[in-house]
Length: 433
Image 1 (cartoon, rainbow, N blue to C red):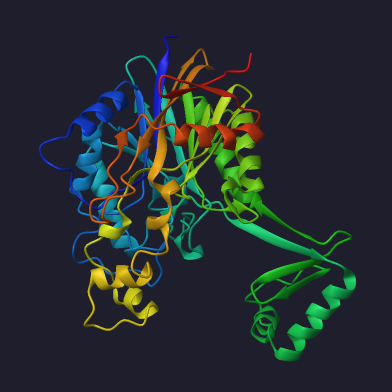
Image 2 (image 1 turned 90 degrees about the horizontal axis):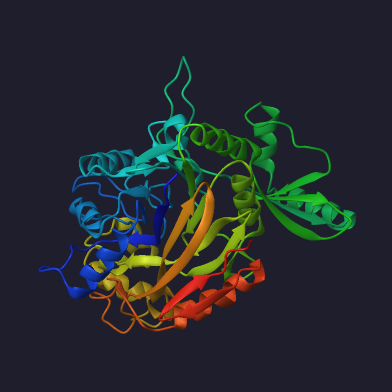
């Protein structure tokens, strides 16, 4: 089998059109991206059109953009995208349908959403010159109502994302568990839940478990918290990987996940690492992570790359052109205020938020080669997105000679046993033999 070259970037939160004429920075990046047979980015916006109603809940910013931004991403050279994110239903089903239509019109392969759970979790295929590559998209970060639903013979499925539900459990000593139960009973915290169980709207609670509002506590010898992905969701992903492995030369899993371990945003949650290992064990050839808008480490597991987060490729969340009333109300603003007012208020006039974090504005483009199912080379190209520019000009990527993103990524990858050497402004990852 001939070598297959993969190019992957993190989030493309693109809300502005490409500058014209094309810049030198664009030309250089586009040339790099087009070196790949598979050219991936995470689509972090939706293209709902002017009349789509907003959801009451968003992924943080109602991430709408003109549908022509998808054509702009295609100009960079991308040919496949993940669409399972915490923004894909910012404008409800109408926004989802419009985004899917725009992707189809642009002839972009996309995965992770669909008209029902089967469609959202299905592998999608990219036809390269000498290989066929499957893409499976999923997210652990989403509103519970955004998960796609199964189709039945007597009921249609629900449109949405290929969600991987995270279950959190807190273990406490027996006396604390009893105190939590007593407290919940005294203040009536679980009255509605108890009634729903009694009337059959919820199943019975398991023994030795106490619901304290939305939190679940269990009796344990060691007091700690744990998070796991719903077994049904892992099983569904495994089935998709097994199907794709029989239908393609390579299988890519794209995972959108904000969750962190402890209070360190740069460290992926343990359950994410466990899931990524499982995906590789079941046949995936790479796991591409994105979501926290900063870099996370890289792991070479069983000879396959796991990118826990590739940060941002394009980041323009402060140039959305309209926001729903819900956004203004959250910050106590009136109908007299405009988008610039709302963004100023959210950032406290540019003193807090993602815009003030320099780590948000530097990242890498990953380029790797596989042959006969084995990783043969992995190179990381540093990019910067204009941290010092005004917010209305920030967010376009360009290749840089700055080593800071590479040095940071080297340090973040070290706990995973990954070693890399910085040579001529690029990081070369050592492939274990």
